[in-house]
Image 1 (tube, rainbow, N blue to C red):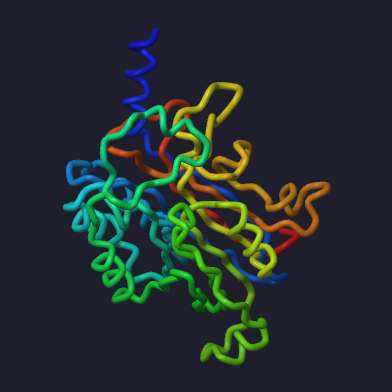
Image 2: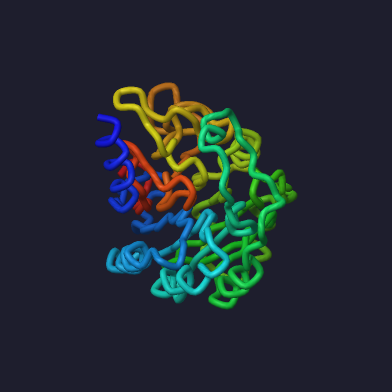
Amino acid sequence: MGAGALGWALAETSMFTLRRHTVPLLPAGSRPLKLLHLSDLHLVPSQRDKVAWVRDLARNEPDLVVTTGDNMAHPDALPGVLEAYAPFLELPGAFVLGSNDYYAPKPKNPARYLLPDARTETNHAPLPSDELTDAFRSAGWKDLTNRRDRVEVAGTGITLVGVDDPHLDRDRFPAREPRTAVRAAGASPADVALHLGVSHAPYTRVLDAMHRDGCDLVLAGHTHGGQLCVPFYGALVTNCDLDRSRASGLHGWPGARPDAAGGEGSTWLNVSAGLGTSPYAPVRFTCRPEASLLTLVARGS
């Protein structure tokens, strides 16, 4: 049984899945927008199947692409990462980085992952994060590293706020701009219809700050959905201080879903289980690697 479970856990790392959600948060009369959320590729050069699968997501014709970091897991992974993202770089996009964009993973006791909030050490070999950032910026993607920005997507104005990786304590939440000031500063005639928050790791301090900031939707990754899940129980850990019930999927923060009873005033939160693992722990159990396609529709739709 143990050998069978291990074999399945190894095989499951290649069972890539696209999770689809419909999120009612746009103003009445808005046309639907498709947002592709990618996270935690943890790419190594040999993973050609993952590169091909990510590229093929372009056939879903997203309007906006957001990556929440941890793209690389090897010093030579950058060309593969850029190849995977190539079909999307002409689209509107935004990004933050994770610890495995700054530092390469290294062998360690796998049991550490099961400890609460097992922080990543920063004495690992550096990864080409500057080159990755330059490539995304050159494509016109918005760098949300402790900063704000705005983008127009299919005639819809979207304001953005993001932080650097909270798992490394690099997050510094940017000063708030009144929405009226954001509109006045923007060159686009489109009204601001959506305020989007982006973070690699969904630490509660960041989620609280984004909720107070008025975000309509927050995107995060990092958790791997627990990576090792128990049937009928779920994730064992989230590798941060987020509760296990929100280890992956679409939820509300701080309460229930915004459209659910008792959830009034909550922010939509999508936590991606991500597409990869550390190369030193290449297993998943009842937690398939995933990307998310969020169809944003008008409230009441």
